Image (cartoon, rainbow, N blue to C red; front, side):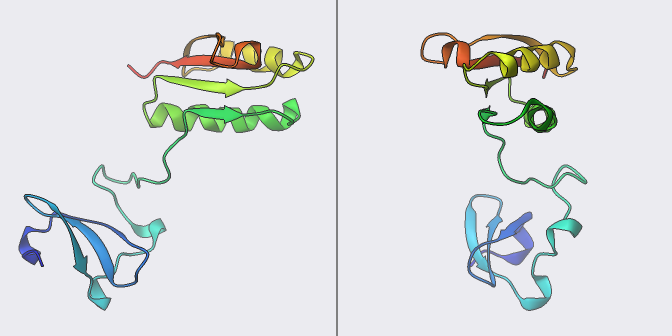
Length: 139
């Protein structure tokens, strides 16, 4: 059990109640959490970067296949914002080949999006004309 004074960050309650991961000066440890020291609900937690709470990782691709354009574009917008905040430099949008309607709508949307530096159709092994590779302006 690490010295409680050395614990710098209590990350998150693990799957077993009363057990948490803790970062000490020299290693990660699993520690027991007293009832009064249990982590607060996610809505009240503060991360090491201030108000930012680290959540689920953002995937490097999103699939819009089978969706209607009017449903897909808001989903794409949120995904690009999340990928930008996660500092992904490149992401892939899978829109499928089909009639090309979704691809054209996605490309039009990307051409006006503030986080997009550049984009291109996928190459062999990247989905070819059924996918678009996006370079985000994370610098």
